[in-house]
Picture (cartoon, one colour):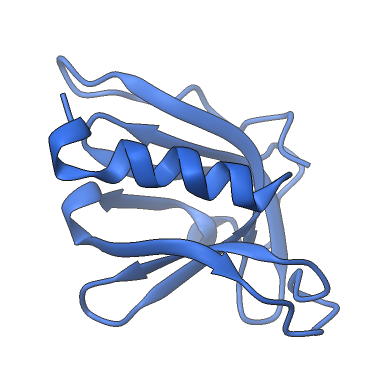
Length: 122
C-alpha cells in the first residue's frame, strides 16, 4: 500500500513524527498509495514512488488545528476510490473531508484521537 515513499518527510525545526502508517489517499475518482504521518504540528500525506498520476493533488500538509473530527467512514461501495472498505476520515472545521484507507481503521482512529487531543500535543 504505502511502502515506497517519494521523499523523506521534511520537518521544521523541533518538529517530530508522532505517528505514521502506510495509507491510501481516497480522491474523488482515484486511490493514491503512500504514507500518512502525524507530526507535532501537521497531518502529512506523502505519495508513494509508484504514484505518478494525481501526485500533486495528493500531497497534503494540514495543520492539526484545522482538524475538527477524525472517525471511521462506512463503506460507500465505490470501487475506484476505496469505498468498498471502511476508511479513516478527517473532517476539517471548514467542512472539507480527507479520507484514507488504513489497515485496521478502528485502531488507527483510536490512536489518532488520542494524538489529536489538544492536551496531547507536545
